[in-house]
Image (tube, rainbow, N blue to C red; front, side, top):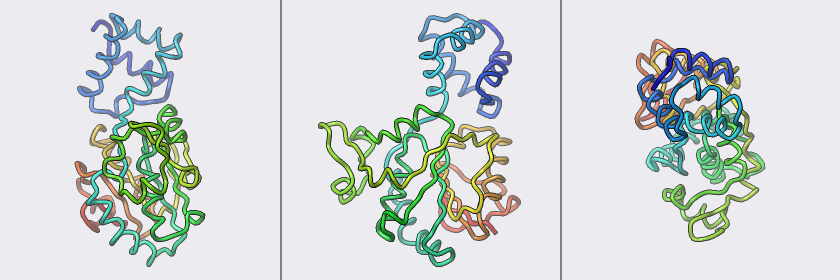
Length: 259
C-alpha cells in the first residue's frame, strides 16, 4: 500500500477527530487496507481524497473501523449474575432510580438487554438507559430496532414473545416501549465528557482494540464517572490491569467496584 499510514492517521484525525493512534496499529491498519483494496484504490492518500469527496465511502469507512459485533444477552451467565446479584446490590445502595450508561453500545443490543432485564425489577416508565457510541450509523440502526435472528440467540424466550414483532423468518423488530427507555447519544470515549454520577457503567468487548495507554485513560475516566461503590461491567475477554491503582476493586467476575 503506497503512501504513509502516519500521514493517513493525521488526515483522519483532522477530518473526524478519531485518533487511530489509540487503536492497536496492526489490527486497524489491516482492516483499513482491506477496505481500500475493495475499492481498487492504490494509496492511503488517494483514499483520503475519496473520503473527502464521496459521502457513501466516508460513511462506510466510519462504520468499518468502529467495531460493531453485538448480540442480545451476550455471555448469558454474566447477565444471570447481573440479575441475581448486581441489580439487587445497586438497588440496595442507590435505590431504584438508577443511572446506567451503556458505553460503546453499537447497534443497541446491550442497552435494550439492560432495559428488558431491569423490567423484572421495575416498571418500564421507571427505566432510563444512556447509550452512546462514536458511530452514528450503528446508533441509527439501534434506534430503528430491527435485528437479525442471529442476534437474538441468547435472548430469553419471554422477552422475545413480549417485546419483539416478527417481520419475517430472519428478522425481528423490538417494541417502541423498550426503545423509549433508551437515550442514544454520539460519544467518543477518548475525548468527550463522560456522564457523571453513574451507578453502573457497561462497556464490554470494546477496549480490547485499544492500546494500553488508551485503556488506562478510559478506565480512569470511567472511575471518575461512577458514584462511590458504583460498578463497571466489562467484557469476558477484558480485565483491568492494576485495577487497584485506578481505584477499583473486584466485585464479581467481570464487575469492578469503585472504592
